[in-house]
Image (cartoon, rainbow, N blue to C red; front, side, top):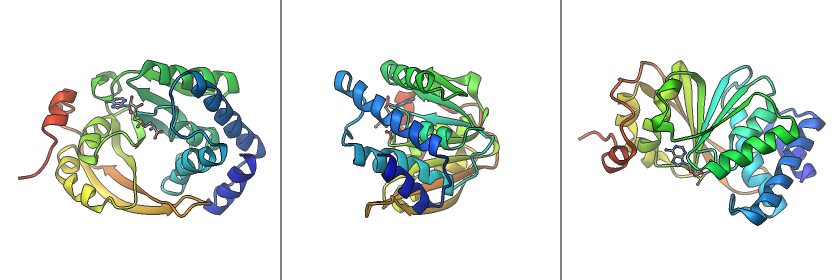
Amino acid sequence: MENILTEGLQALGIPAEREAVKTLAAYGRLLADANRVTNLTAITDPADMARLHFLDSAALLTAADFSGRRVADIGSGAGFPGVPLRVLRPDMHLTVIDSVGKKVDFVDASCRRLGIENVNCIWGRAEELPQLRERFDIVVSRAVAELDVLAELCLPLVTRNGLFIAMKGPDCREEAEQAEHAIRTLGGRLREIRPYVIPGTDITHTALIVEKIAPTPMRYPRRYAQIKKNPLRGS
Ligand code: SAM
């Protein structure tokens, strides 16, 4: 896994210390071990894990400057994209949020074990954390919800002038258009739709980068059932 990571990071133009690559590989091993007992990820082959979890996550470093930033990963699952970002940017402060306790516990225990510091793990729902409102410079999220729903979970947590970055598949223009009203209503503006190829694959993913240009109105986020039933869409 280390070779794939080293070559992939080079291909992405991301300089990485040998120590960081070792830490990522060790995190992958912990994930594979834990996954034998608890279902944390469907990706188990080490080479696939290197590319589809670690390099996919790392690619976000080409989309924004994470150094020294307070970053939240919403619906982080087994720690993606947040943990690889944190390992590759040691001066970043990461908050991992997930609604499933065993996933948060895995990330917490693994980061402690590998000495990955400045990681705060929260078991909870993103829309039920008013104490974290507008507290993050960057909020990232992969594979959690459609963009119009996801925007309501994430944008309230972003500070003014901060970023919300959603990781999506190759064809997300329609999804982005459908979310335009939600993003605007929540104080955001779509800055960029940025495709990238995961090194060592022919898979294109997309980083949707939204900047926060105004405070989110206090009536958002709503309860999840409301958000889901009635996503913010223009008429
Ligand atoms: N981001 C990880 C990845 O890409 O590997 C995990 C993706 S998994 C498909 C979606 C995760 O989002 C699940 O772990 C789920 O528990 C979490 N989730 C869904 N809705 C959430 C919410 N409202 N707040 C926090 N976590 C949520």
